[in-house]
Image (cartoon, rainbow, N blue to C red; front, side, top):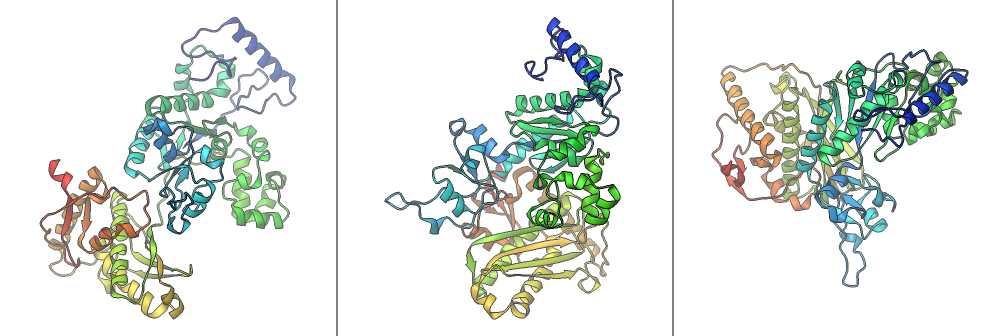
Length: 532
């Protein structure tokens, strides 16, 4: 519900208009008539010369971003830490008996997120644990709880679906929503609002109701921005965090963007900003002052997209989802892994097996198949090698969504990387990180089956279907495949991530049939599954 103190010219759904409301509306109309353009730029309200013409003639796109999501969930579940600097990701610093911090034991973890109290100390997302410990040694450090975050994320998106069915999640804590065509439905929520003002302010009212509904149902705060396209909506949601609310009508987009910094623009990172400044572009106004043709000629696609979006061009529907091009999973080791020892290579293979299982699990959830595989190895000196291979006819695969098909290829790629491509200097330093990338994604499977292989493939697909259902209900770590057990047993050597679950006891179950291509096809099932 909009705050009546900040919205004197609108009647709330539960209140009747007062004389003060009528006076405010009269002043608002007089202000609009007194301007040459017949418009007011600021909070998204526009009245056009008393004509009632709406400033929202095309698409209405909203961007919702949960404020410091992981840290906010920790504060929600433990009210005692509210107001304190909360840092999610790395463990708390280890101290010597004299109270000084032992930075040698900070590990290689990074900050997943921090609340605004921690950001006041300089702590930022993706910051190394050592640096966070130096800046905020007395902060509250909490591990990631992926399942809890996903649970609340689903609740938030469920609230969004009460307002519009057209939603596009772009992360666990943010999404785009299409408000287009919802003016009449919103009018039913505000039957007593002034018609002229409502015609120009209804997207902000709807966003305000959505924000309040999320806070009421989940206890979480969110910032929402509204605009004619995703570019403007995203900028608006970042404008006044936390619990921000900003609506920018199409005709106000240019003025809104001109008031921002160049680095605030979507797609303009530090490197791009430096290049733009070298070309003489130091503010968004320098780009918007160009003609569209000049912006395209001088800055290419970036200039065209910024110019179009900043001049209020309609954006695409949030539910028009672009097809993913690749899926990657990687892991940084807490300690460098030796390349010369057999134990080191076995641990790398075990870790790659686990990463391949997670990547193919994502493939199956999205009904996609991969036709290429890449293995990435980063050494302790931060140099890295990426080795790619297509799953062509020589592998007899074509495309797949199963790690049983991918792991033999991954094993060959790792062996070739360590024996043929890596230098002796890199090998002496050891391995810091390994990763798997699946590319060439398609919704169609291409595979040439060998004689008698059809039944085996069907059996394996049935096994994966059951395993996916178990993981959907109990989390990915409810099951492990045989070759990744060494990785599971040494989880303490890995840097924890939000995908890791608490390590509980395991119970061996019978090996499924039809798992050829898997070195050790035994599945391990956690004890709590037997109680389900």
